[in-house]
Structure formats: structure tokens, C-alpha cells
Image (cartoon, rainbow, N blue to C red; front, side, top):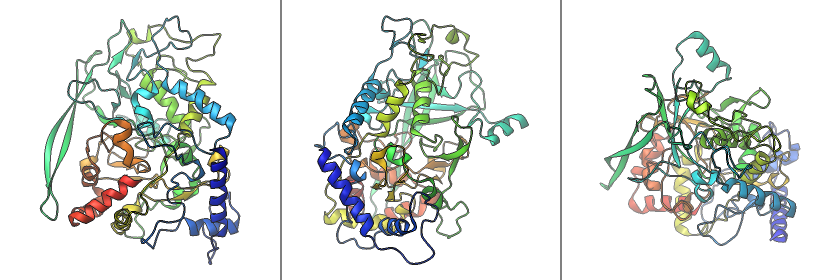
Length: 507
């Protein structure tokens, strides 16, 4: 497999090298990792498709040489990047063990595994990211694990407004319950409450008279364990996104993402993607956010550290509070024992724990596509571009030559996302700003692997809260900047709608 990966990498580099240099003043001038000659070649390779009679070169290799070609089964999202060295495969395996690890409450005989909570949403990373795929909302009678609620309150003073404007805080926590609603607690402590999801069906008609039922979610918090919440609390439901390809997303040159932003819609196409600018807690600098539903995290490690703290209640060098999301108002929570062990490190998940989990998370491989030459797939791909779906779900990038991980450098990848914030309309609005993202904006989620959702996660659920049960429902929920694309889809003949969905399922 290592020899095959190296051969594929050589072919991809050869393809990039063979691409003709574009004329003009120098495309991709922002790519400080490339020579002027390489910039022209990369611009050529990443240009939008114009011929839909056949697949593009290397289109099946969604993640470049990192793409895995293992047998497609329920474990399709759990393989390492195919071009990792033997030593890095070992690091990946160690990170996998920590990603699947169940944490326990303190004190415990398993000294390296205690520190859970005291309040939490899951006992392991895998508990939310089912088989490294996307989570889903609970079925009737189930506890909510892979779906949780973000909480915050609007600013009430100039000081609070200044704090948000500075970027030091993305949101203001609800005074008692913090920024996340935890539905589980360690023995001897009350959970923050119960989360219930109820749905109301709404029927929409397509152009040919077809009726499609969409479910409108209603989220209710009950049995509050620490008193009432603020009247002004803002709530946002979130399901865990799939884990594949994250390191390659981090390896995209920031200039390529920023070059796609059009905040004032200067080209008049109705699409005005904005960059999410966030504070990097490690450096204190304002940087590009690209991870999470609102692009609120700049790196995979920052996202992982936030999940360790907020979802599991485990401290790390990045988030050192051993009480996780326990607020100062929750005195009983902060009086519980922690899992810090002086002989193991200063936090409950000291390095190398975070280093290994970060490496694992950045190297979960994207599966190789199949059926890319199917006439229906090709027809759907052409419709995807004609309806301007590709204006936000940008098909491809070439990663930076300076990427942190060697296996991620100079790869032609197909994430189908511009990683920018877009106004998705009132129907999908959570009305909860976070950082520079408004209450109507969401980051364009990558689409690679989306066709394997049911196989990996056990059922189809899409969008930030899992409300959509099919890809068609997900499309029909699009609004705002995507309204024209949504309406274009709704107006297609049945065979064309089926072709577009078939294309999505091929990704």
C-alpha cells in the first residue's frame, strides 16, 4: 500500500507539473509557498470543469495521495491517510486508541483514564463521531449524545460588546449553564438537564408537483439541575460533523480561502461568502477560522481541545480547567474531584495525549470515489455547477507545500467547500452569533464522503442539527444566498433531480 500511495503521489505531482502555465499577471499571487511557475499550473488544475462527458483527471482521488482505497464498509471513515510513513501509521494507531477511549469519573483505579466531567455530553470522542462519521439527533426515547446545544447570551453592556469585538471571547456564556448544555453528570452530581427534540412536518411542493415533507425541529430543555436560565439565552443545536480529511483542510493555504470571499457581493451573483476571523488562543493573533459549524476554530487541535473540555470535561494543555464547562455558579460541580495526576502531567489529558489525538484527527482518510464515470453522475455534476452549487461548495484545492504534515503537502483535493461563512436564510438560522458569524451564517460543510453517511453512521441525517433525513431535504432547506440554487433544484425534472442527488452520493 505504501508503494501504491507513493506511485499515486508521483502521478499527481506529474499532473500538476504538466499543466500549462496560464498567461497574465500571475494567478494565485497570494500563494507564497509556490513558485510563479507552479502558481500557473495550480490555477489550471483547480479551474472549474468545462467538459462533463468524462471525469476530470484524478477526480476519484478526493484526498490526493492520502485517499484510501480500502473496501467500502461501515468503517470507511476510520482508515489513515494512505501516504503516511510507517512511523506515522504507528502514531495514528495510538491516537485512535485515545479517540475511542472511555473516560471515567474521579477518583478511579484507572489513573490515566479518570477526570470525566463532572458535567459532560459523551464519555469518548467516538461517542459523538460515530465510526468517525457524523452524529445524529436522538430517536424518540433515546438520550441525546451526538447532538448538543450551544448556549450564550447577548451583550448587555459596553464592556461586553467590547469583549466580543476584540475577539477574546466568541460568545458570552449563559451565567449559570455556560456555553454548552450538558445532559450527563458523574455519580453524585446533577446533570444540567434533559434535552428533547420534537418535530413538526412541513410539506413543500416541487415544480413538477412532487410533495416533499421537511421536519421542523423544536428543542426543549427540561429538568434543569441548577435553576432557571437567563431569559435572553440563545440556543443553537449541533450534531458532530464527520472527521475525514480534516488535516487536508488545515493544509489549504489561507490565501486560497480568503481569495474566494466576496463579502459585499462585488460580482453580483448573490453569493457573498465571508471569512471567519477568530483569535488563536495559542498565539493571541487573529487568524482564519475553518473548523466547526460556524468556522470558530482555526486548527484541528483547537477544535479537539474544545471538544475534550466541553463535551467530555477533560482538561488539556490548551484548556487546562479540570472542571470543563462547570461555571462558577455551579459550586457542587466545581467541588468534585478532578482527574489530574501529578506524575502524569499537569492536566487530565496532557501531551502526548492531545498531540496523538490531533495527529489521528488530521489523518483520517477520505475514501476513494466510485462511479465517477457513470453518465448519471456526470449529468448531476454538470447540474451542480449550472445551479451554482459549486459557488459555495468549491470542488478542489491544491494544498500548501508548507503544510505541517508531509503527507498533506501539495495534494490536489476535492472537499467541495469554500470554508467560508454564508447566510443560509431564516429557515436554518439559529439566531445565535458566534465570533464574526451572524445568527444566519454557517460555514460551507465539505461534501466529500457524504454519500457514505448511512453506511457509516447508521442513518441519514444532514445539516447542522441533523433535521434533514435525505439529501433532497437538505437541499430544500437551503435559503439566503443559496435560495436561487435551491429553487433551481426544485424546478428540475425528476430525472435531473435524481442525477444531482446521485452525483452527491458519489462523493
